[in-house]
Image (tube, rainbow, N blue to C red):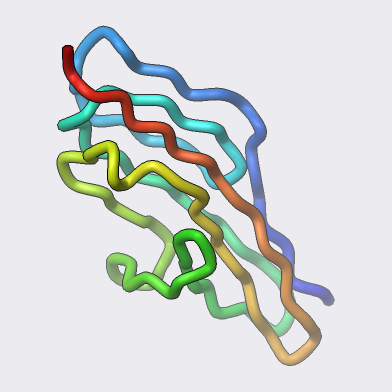
Length: 105
């Protein structure tokens, strides 16, 4: 079975304060600078795919089993496209989230 990523395409916006935000890959995320952001990627398939993360197509190291990407105290420099790729012997599939970090005024 070709790998599958459970992606959500709902916007996540938090501009009132810097409380931590969690979102699923596929979401467009807008937060204030200083916010901790967690993006979750759930992959499935047979064989079970390996998950990898990249930002603007550059590989990233995620926490644990690559299920979650954690961005501590996001800054405007963290804005960009974050990709989760599920890879198996059968094939691969990629989903992305776009993160926009707005500076504090």
